[in-house]
Image (cartoon, rainbow, N blue to C red; front, side):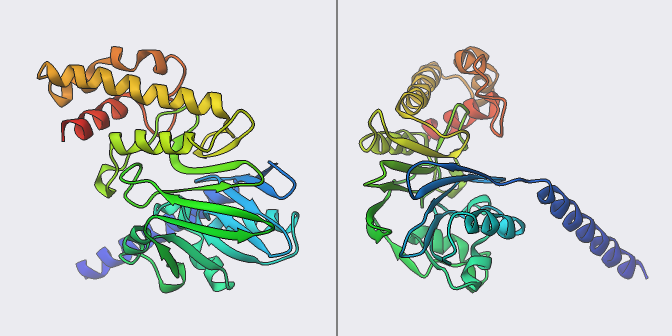
Length: 288
């Protein structure tokens, strides 16, 4: 009897969680921003989506959460009556890959770095997995322009890629750029401070004053905002390394608000990653 009650309690908890999650996504609206004649940015809940439309079909970058797929497809249908042909994942996190299975079931080809497939294998059904993977760099000819997809090592995770639309001058950074906010550096998935900084520098090589930058999270960015983000990372790195040289502990660094004050005052810590978490992450990564 006790076992039955325990199973029933778990079942009810799962149902309530499912209903809460669905209710949460019911309130999400998909915002569409045109970036060029055929490139768009979609914002909803989760990682920002890039969309390319044209005669070849629809090419999208990232898929957010599974319950949002119908809303995302409705937004895309307002841009093109062609099917989603290719999906590219910038990394493996669920707020960027949650809709993979839905789109795979509709016939889309999923592309990602090989490490993304390795990580998704642990938790995802077959239709959610990338069917084309690569190690370093991949070029796609889609909708009359070349799309350069390139891997950046040990940045946000170990499977991050950026995508540059060569004719439209649009860069999608995935979660190697959080516009005007502290980033999440997933150390447990191969991310690192130094790799993250190097990734931003790699992206900067594609950027000029007219480039439109789709961040993983936050508003559409430009070169000035991207450079400010890089300066933030390097400033905090220098400050934390100085504390490490003084043999300060992780907790001491985490409590030292002066390290991030200039960016805390700008609201960088008002989002998913607060300032204490940022200082702690920098300490752990740089100490290693």
